[in-house]
Image 1 (cartoon, rainbow, N blue to C red):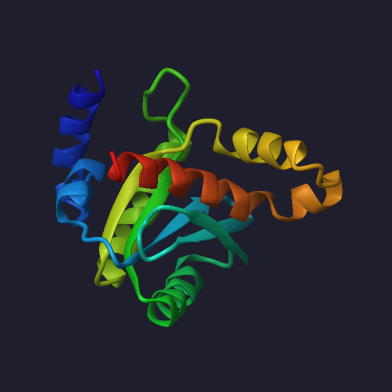
Image 2 (spheres, one colour; image 1 turned 30 degrees about the horizontal axis):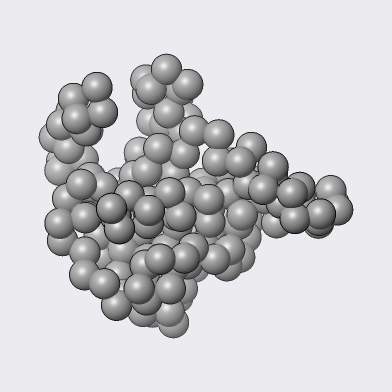
Amino acid sequence: MVKKISRKLSLKLKLYNMITIDELKKKQTTKTRLIGLDLGSKRIGVAISDENQKIATPFKTLQNNGLKNLISDLSVIIDENKIGGIIIGNPLNMDGSFGKASQSVTDISKNISKSVNINVSLWDERLSTVGAFNLSSQLDINVSKREKKIDQNAAAFILQGALDFLNN
């Protein structure tokens, strides 16, 4: 099932100058950092991996002030942190189908990939915000602090899932 969706997605993404996570696995070299994004309508969570692509760390939360500002902010982060690829959370429906939110993320990802000179790949982010919130609750962090950093924690959750895949 995953391979079938991956093949369909692969053909679709090539039209948008993006690559699938499987293609990223083949192309990506270690000793380069990856960035993870959790795109939201109000806020965008950002996480960065270490150079060995083993650990994702929450980095910051950006306000969603439009695509132009997002690309500008990403360009600065990419240059300052020597980023070699971008993983963007794709909010698929629970049954794995593409919904309105997924289409929106795909459109934004396409525009990001046209504006930056590094690989961009989508990663299934179902339940990432819930997972990040639950993980932070296990760390005994109070609710107001959890909610403040939920977007960057969700981005780290997304990026960590992709890193685990890339390392297996």
